[in-house]
Length: 159
Image 1 (spheres, helix red, strand yellow):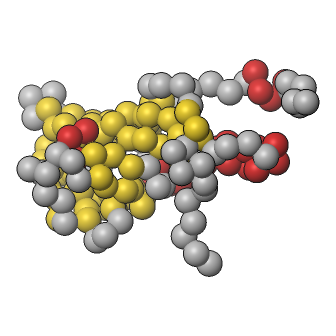
Image 2 (cartoon, rainbow, N blue to C red):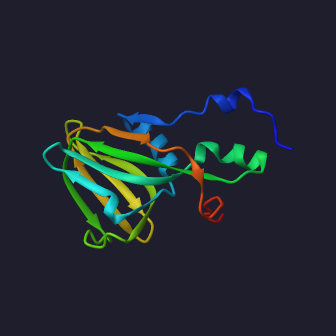
């Protein structure tokens, strides 16, 4: 027997969020924590000044509901776009290794002068992607329907 649908079930929509300040970016950071992506899914379009990642994002916004209903945890493919990207640097990431799977721990902004600065993606295993930007503008958009997380589990960071 399954549970009846609730009003809240109908309200689930793909995420489409934009961060224009540090507080907004903190929200995105929580949502992309534990997202994974292969190195082949990073792209910097120098002419368009845009850096993008195709992430397999753990659906943290749904984790409590999954636990309450005793159903599998979910992931969703999402695009993370950093606009006004003037330069991209990385440490601990081999751009030639397209099969390397990277895991996001956090995203933060290191402010510089005149609204510019650096958007930093901290990765598991001491990796960092640092994007110099003219202004802070980061977009997160879900691009697929949620799917059952392959591990069927919730990421655990130990306590």
